[in-house]
Amino acid sequence: MGINLQITDMAGATPDHSTAITNFVNMIYNQLKDSTCRVYPDNVQYKWKLNDGSEKIVIPDVSINCQIKSRKGNSFLNAPQFVLEVLSPSTTKYDQTEKKEIYREEEIPEYWIVDIQKRTIEMYDLDYENEEPRYYLIDTITHENKEGLHLIHFPHIKIDFDKIFDGIE
Image 1 (cartoon, rainbow, N blue to C red):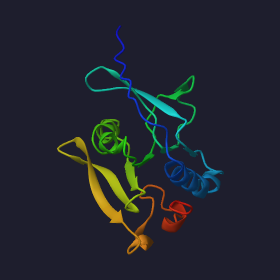
Image 2: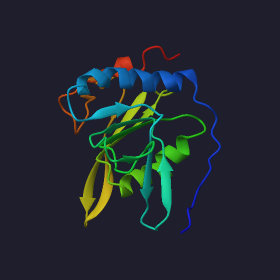
Image 3: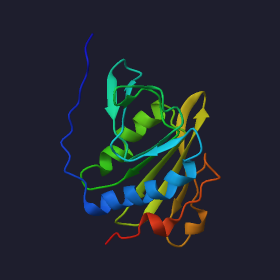
């Protein structure tokens, strides 16, 4: 039994990166309080076996998980229903390619990419093409169309574009 571990050297998160994560989690936390779902910042890990048989551990910047008892130690074994990644210079390529592909393979229904430099949010929804999961870009939210920002799979949750970027230089 071999474990394929990949160590990625990443610089610590910038204060702006952490602020966007904290702002999102704070906005969502109380809205999920009386449900079976929880929102987690970037201190929760997910451990999955990939299609090629290897094991992968990922730590999303933000996740919403509705099966919070499916874990071993400090790792969730199931896929969350939502993942958000905040881009930073050291993670941009990884978040937009390899990590997005892992989330697609795990069939995570909704994936957001937040670019704090450009102040944009890309909203992806998972659907199937020939029985294969695929992400579709639903919208890219900017200041101009910020009223369109919403969680696709949690429509009762209120999201405020400006609050996500509040306090970011």
